[in-house]
Image 1 (tube, one colour):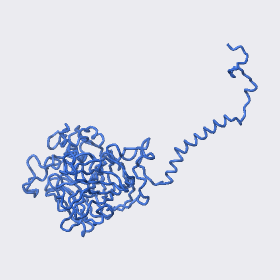
Image 2 (cartoon, rainbow, N blue to C red; image 1 turned 45 degrees about the horizontal axis):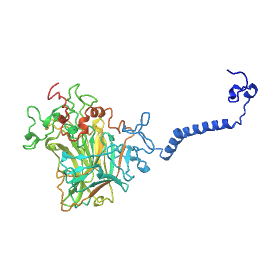
Image 3 (cartoon, rainbow, N blue to C red; image 1 turned 90 degrees about the vertical axis):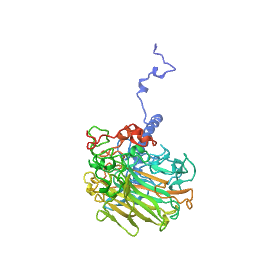
Image 4 (cartoon, one colour; image 1 turned 135 degrees about the horizontal axis):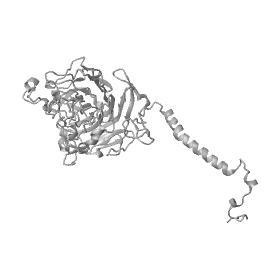
Amino acid sequence: MWDREPDLDDALHNPDPRRDNSWTPFSWRGWVNASALIILTGALLMLFIGYPAWLWSKKGHQSFNGFNIGGINGSGQIPEFPQLPRLIDPDTPDEVYTRTGHDGHKYNLVFSDEFNRDGRTFWPGDDPFWEAMDFHYWPTDDWEWYDPQQITTEGGHLVFTIEQKISHDLNFVSGMLQSWNKLCFTTGYIEVAVSLPLTPRQFGLWPGAWTLGNLGRAGYGATTEGMWPYTYDTCDLGTFPNQTGLDGAPGPDVLGTGNNKLSTLPGQRLSACTCPGSDHPGPRHNVGRGAPEVDILEAEIDRSRWVGRASQSLQVAPFNAAYRVVQDEPATTIYNRTITHINEYEGGPYQQAVSALTELDDKYYGGDEFNVMGFELWSNPDRRSEGYITWFADGKPTWTVTPETIGADTRAQIGPRLIPEEPLYVILNLGISKSFQDPDFENLRFPAQMKVDYVRIYQRPEAKDGLTCDPPNRPTAKYITDHLNAYMNPNLTIWANASYTFPRNSLLDGC
């Protein structure tokens, strides 16, 4: 107990009312405490107000397309934090942040990758937007194994290298890069600056830059069965297997295809005829869904003149009679007929190719100069007559298709195909296959390289949910999650291999 005597070890038990009531503003300890609080407050203000303001002052017009707490970006993948990849590459020049579209509308840059940092890799998980494939691309009977080691960044470019060496019992190894389920866009303008391999006198490689609907994962055959290349929202014969009714009509004589079948497709898996309550991604069971393909370029060599050509196409299903679309103006426009013409190949039993060929300058081969190629696409489910696709080569428009190009066909008994409304992802690859062009092994030289200087995507300011793989009016995320077996196994060639079944078709099967 305290005996009221001073405690030498504890000043609290030696009170002095007079001295304890005194204070001084010049206390060293008090000023240290106050200074610490001021510094801490200033640091927090700089972190959350000053630093963002400084960033904005450097590039105030940059569009992050973010939403939600944490700054989830427009593709739903990553936050916009320093040192992490952004939707818009900081290396993109300021002067290309906007463009005037071929349609006269203003377009804003919403994604870019300049590939300026050397040594990037694209194995699964390495990059928020891109993933290199590790498989054999069997759907087109390719001769190469796609290996992530064949893709890197060097000298400010994305580089694909094809080599002649044995891999997985195949004679070649090369690279394919996809943005599947990571980066997608609906409507807009995509631009790729590309340098093609070798020279226009060495033919047989298959360089490609293309897009595909997110419900079909390229190289994963189970996911594309009954999906590629459908872009269709009518409940009729066009959704049936082989595009043929139960009575066998329309016959090959009506279609003008001789004794060959017009189509060997299994029918549209997710059609406008889908029965209520069936396995369907939405937004409603009676909305036709698919995986249409729009090609920026597939490069080939015209051996009669030794000039490079780019096939720029829309792949569609179901098919017109004899695969013939409306090729005349105003439905279809070609802007320079001296270098661009309609492709003589119009399709086969697996696809209809709405395609034009454009000649390419020799300087865009070999890696020194880059051809600016792309397409501008507009679609609106509420006003489908306004849709169009315009392709570009060397920065200039080459040709345009409209809804009238791919309208209804009474001979084939089908309705109009759609200018794609699906979220499209980007694919870049360098392949080799006899199914595209017979390789000239006498003159081909390996290794060969395709280089990409940049990829940029633009959209109109009013575009809503335009940079996501899961837009509300064409959702994909839940359907993919519910069928992961098909989307993660490239060895499954058909939907049934993944233990799934096609939903019932009200016209074909009844509900």
